[in-house]
Amino acid sequence: MTNEIYLAPMEGLTGYIIRNAFHHHFDYIDKYYTPFIPAAKRMNFKIKNDISPDNNAGIIVVPQLMTIIGEEAMDMAHQLRDYGYNEVNINLGCPSGTVVSKGRGSGILADPEKLDHFLEELYSIADMNVTIKTRVGFNDDESWPRLVEIYSKYPISELTIHPRVQKDFYKGAIRLEDFDLAVSAIDQSKTRLVYNGDINSMENFNLIKERYPSINSFMIGRGMFMHPSLAAQIKGVTMEEAEYRQRLKNWHDEILNGYLELFSGEKDAIFRMKEIWSYLKDDFEDSNRIWKKIKKAQNVADYKAAISTIF
Image (cartoon, rainbow, N blue to C red; front, top):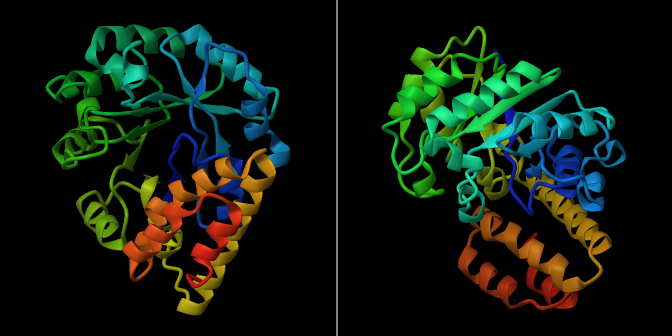
């Protein structure tokens, strides 16, 4: 079976401008997840603009919701259905302190019985496809067997697992033994498992694929910004270096122009580009020199001068 690649939701990074740039220049991503949408609120202009079909033509997009209340989730899902969406994803993995302090994101994993109650409420009223993204625990992974038992009870068509606990954030070793448990305990004929975590090179991908040959869906976040051709590589697409660099320049230019059009001030656009370069710099030789020049840029002219020799 062909490997499916999903672009992970990254707040501030994976909006429609980025999605379109990948779609136009590295069209090897099968599905894109939006940065989380607070389900308790009505959609504001920013969210409506991001999920608008006009801004996502030809792209499979899944809105991700932040909530631990079933009725909230379905109310927002119904609003999204008016825009043509028939699937939503629930974020049970965000490790941010401001999120978990309210028991949301990975915060709910500290209380397995509360999670069970939420999923029971959610799936009893769900009238569209609802998938889940999770971590393997809160302070530690001792409750992971119980969490797997809970997830196995419900008609979750797709369960994305980042094998870290909340306390890990995005650092430290991936807890592959916890993903082992999910693979062995969850009925994959009912629930498709998606692996997420630290796939930032073909070497990393091959190690994961070798360990989990039954897994064919992979969610990648930071690795796609470190190497924008990573999805192509995973799918066996080869590019000459000149072709890759030209695609990369076109990808970069589309993002920069999109941000300059979206934001009223140059600083906001340059800030976003610096965030991308914090990952992308490692795709170039002499990355430290490149990164120092980019970090100093305060306006578009400075920024363009800093990157003028890179491509």
